[in-house]
Length: 103
Image 1 (cartoon, rainbow, N blue to C red):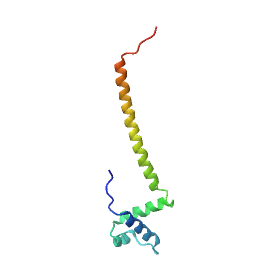
Image 2 (cartoon, rainbow, N blue to C red; image 1 turned 60 degrees about the horizontal axis):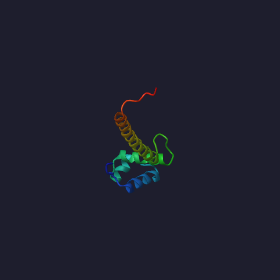
Image 3 (spheres, rainbow, N blue to C red; image 1 turned 90 degrees about the vertical axis):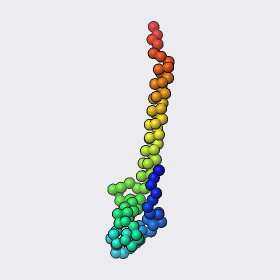
Image 4 (tube, one colour; image 1 turned 30 degrees about the vertical axis):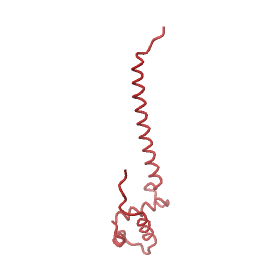
């Protein structure tokens, strides 16, 4: 289970919009202080918004992160199922006995 978000999504969106629309651009520290958030959180929100808009290529988009998480969960489930099938195959093979040789 994921940890609860410290800041609501509305605050994140507003903070990013304020940063992007300000002229001249304020420092992250100054704007974060005005909004009551940590400056590194604001910096990460802005960088992620830039990645989501295709303006940055040094970090994955939010959609890519969600897809990677989904695929990791699916992969873990498939590995678990394969392990169960291997164990079942080994069990039934031992119940049948040694392989018969046909002459």
